[in-house]
Length: 355
Image (cartoon, rainbow, N blue to C red; front, side):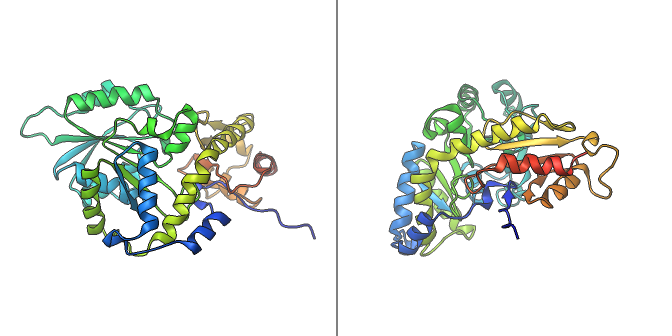
């Protein structure tokens, strides 16, 4: 019997497993009580993360969502508005937490490519009139997940930052995949993070750590964020056992995320030649989103499934996993835990089940 091929799991870069180096670091970690500030491994991780982002301080968070929502809570007051792009993670995939936890309203700007422009942000800022909710913060997402992993150019960020500063607004960056953005732009991550009052990035996505995200900012901001983290139930004890994996992620995995970006581009190049499949935007990072047209099925419709669900279901039967976003869109995310022949495996699966 032929050996079973490994699964090609493209649903997300959160499916990665900790590397042997991470597992060893976790087993050997020096720990203490982090609520008392006494976990040496967490303290070192926070110092290293802050340095990489060009910030004074950082805070180890259980998740990116908690990191984002902690930042909004610290920066804003209940009854305020937050300017965000309409497909942003903060708005769509964090359980309305800005409203539930912080009493905030989103002021969502829809853009064709997922990248807000300074003039759009300026137009969205409320006039200082007593019966309007006061705009307090602008939040950007770089890379922009649901815009196909688009990378916001640095000059666009700078223009938006200038508008926000002129209007006295805070700035937060959801940099869950900031290292993928930095690799595409060919700059250190601290340049992508520059000019923001707070930056969140994930250790558990393309960097492969099993748990955790980092929230970075000024020392006073992080002091307040620590209090909010505790209020939200994020105070951890001997969490150095997971922070140790995060340290390995920063030291060993950051340099290789460009490989994930390259793999996504190569996969998109091959997929764009398949009739009925349309790549929404050429990948700039490790995310590609495609639409599944009716003609991909030939004369056969997917039955009870949507087109996207039918496409995903058929690929799964051939050992390739992807994520249906809605009725027609499918997302694939590349990461270090994929087999070397990923592109060939995907193309073989598509050829076997299509048309």
